[in-house]
Length: 442
Ligand code: NDP
Image (cartoon, rainbow, N blue to C red; front, side):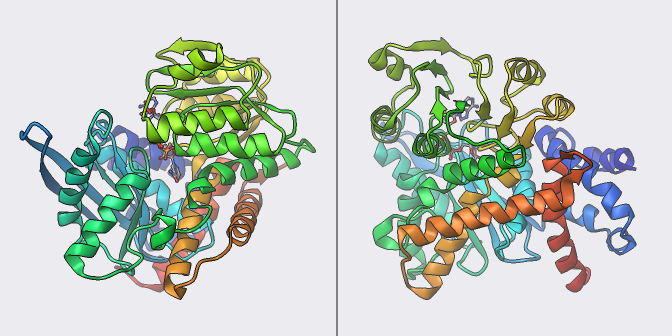
């Protein structure tokens, strides 16, 4: 039955490898549950969920610093609005295409449902590469991108946020152009600056939330995060705040990476070293290699850090960054827990290795949901025209991560193993499916 279903999906979405991979993962774990609930089968809920409500693709022309015209492609996938307005980030990266954004939008539907907040799922972005561009070029691109996107989004319709290549700088340029064109100051984007409607803890939320989720997973095995050696990939938003929370809790992060390679600091990162990374990546926009030069540690060109011995792995860069060989190596090296900061960083064969070894494996749609959850809290603050304190927002984030973990346990616990993939997929599915049934065939 999942095979027949997937045959149709693959035929309809020919060549969209990442999207089909994401749908397959959900269908394999949700289909047995759906079979026991004929109302979901009759209403063709899974079939409808695998079809975006709307796909928007557009031209983004802009002029570079040399006066040359450049053309990129922009997208917004409005996947599912059964439980709330579309919500999900924008990714600016040369690898962006329809398949990658549809996979991210599909995952987002389940993730947003798990947060317990009223948010539907969407995702968008462009094949624009901010790397190596001047601030003025990034601004001109963002203004052109928003000139088209603004007619499709709104604070009650579709609320984009950041993702790879879209941080505070880009959100600022995008918000400025939206406000100028629409003549309204609204919470149409999240991840905004603190002075103009942003929420405290939003930048930290995905990384912090991922560590809170790992803590909950470890508790099921009477383990604590203190003293654990942690391998992190990436050195962007998610990786930086994962490292920060780990340092606060007494764990030892030993690796970081970027698209050129990874550093291995066997003494572990500390607050001062992390400040260097933040300055390097967020302000100077340099390469992680410079960390190795400054602190005299090892640097490995063109690879991910999964050969390093660690207790916990936090993949926080991009999709499919852990393959079967990496998974075997992690298990062999004694890794007991994998918490995904990135979306779908573990290839399907690698997931099987983790599950067969019965190690704790927390998929991104549960483990990294703290980011979008805090975006939801930013939306609430914007509606109230109030700003909550740092402590307030972080406590809410922590409680949400605990609740997400509880849902995974509720739907994923078999005799003596918690299948977090099954738990997250079914937990996320039920609320959306019930809302779709209530709202009829739309
Ligand atoms: P950033 O752009 O801040 O950082 C991305 C990091 O990953 C950079 O170090 C980048 O290296 C590296 N990277 C990106 N693409 C590749 C690649 N193809 N190969 C190797 N390294 C790569 O993004 P975020 O930290 O925001 O996002 C990281 C992951 O977390 C993504 O999967 C995203 O979807 C997910 N996520 C993010 C959330 C958020 O709130 N930001 C929320 C939930 C999930 P380089 O500097 O060389 O480009």
